[in-house]
Each structure stands twice: as structure tokens, then as C-alpha cells.
Length: 187
Image (cartoon, rainbow, N blue to C red; front, side):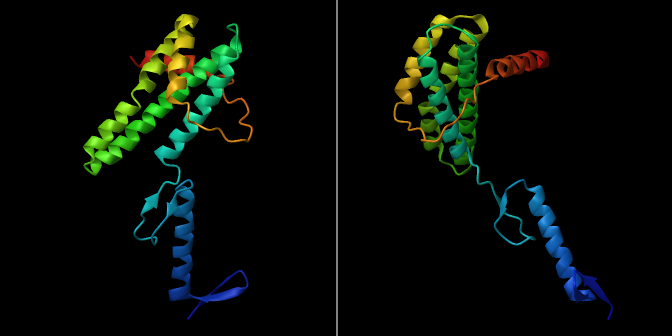
């Protein structure tokens, strides 16, 4: 039997080389999954995404509360207020997308009532995003305090972590306008 040398150890052909190829294929496939964890062997390929909709929604809600806290302290409309408001609009839209993901998964399992209740509990995100987006785009800044007040009632129990989040809202106004331009071009 022929032998190949891998590293410093010789490998006999039929069994060991095929095992090595399987390990390399498994490694390559794991690298292609972008952080997804393989639960079963290579042949079965059951994947689980550790960054599920609930975890993302929680992060978006915390980022929204952080931006709301910053926005409440502002007295006049400037670039930072535009960025903060646009950031809140973008996070509310992301929250709404996670709601649909969660409800779709529940509906697949025939949890219709649970999905409907959950959608109704989070319906305010669409209306708040619409109001705030109108305020940003049409410069109707008098709409912002009422919308933020309504959101604060819903998000009053959210606790922020002690670590510094930085300023993730910087450039959000330009991003929102860019997304609106792309949507308008599609129509």
C-alpha cells in the first residue's frame, strides 16, 4: 500500500486519506456557514443559527432605548437629532422584521393565537416608525416628542447594559435617505 506524508506522519491510502478528506470537507463546510454551528455529523447537516430573531430584537430594542435617552436631552434640531431619529426609525423597522420571523416560525408549528397576540403586542413599532420617518423626511419635528413619549411607555422596563455602546446612530440619517432612494428607484 502506498503512503502519503502529511505533516510528519505517514498516512496509508484507503482509510486514513479518506478520513482526512472528510475532515477537510467538514472544515470547509463549517467555514462556509458563517458562524452557524453544525449539530450533527457532516452527512446530516442540521444547522442552528445562534443569533436568532429574539436576540437580535433584544439588541435593537436596547439600541432604540439608548437613542431615545439621548434624543430626550436635545433642545434644538441639529445633525445629531436627525441621526438619532433616523436611527430609531431604522431600529424600529429591524424590530418589525424580527417580529415577522418569530411569528412565521410559530405559524409553521400551528401556534396561530400566540403569533397573533405577539404581532398585536408589537404593532406599535410600525406606527412609530412611520411617524418618526415622516418627521425626519418632511422636517415635521413637532411629531417627534409625542412619538418618543408613546414609545417610552412601551419600553420603560428595558434595562441597558453598563458597558458603553458608543454612538451607533452616527450617519443614520444618510443611511435612511439612501434606503428611501433605493426603495423609490424600485417603484
